[in-house]
Image (cartoon, rainbow, N blue to C red; front, side):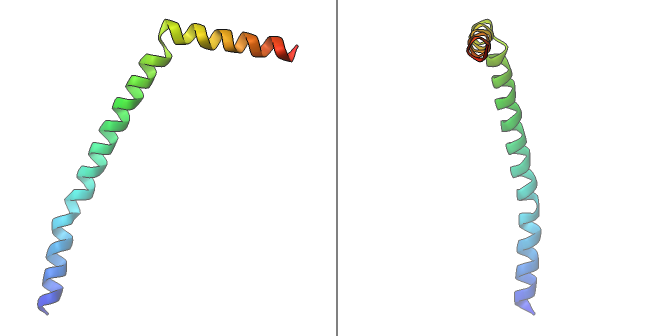
Length: 61
């Protein structure tokens, strides 16, 4: 009977840990997405992407 109590107490103690881990992961993913958005929308990257697309269209023609 004592082992069941220990297991139940341990499960309750770890229940919030997964929620905290998901929160940290979500915050990290949002931060990475914001950084990626800033990089992709910068003028340098836009011009490189436009040049790449133009080159690909010229090769296809």
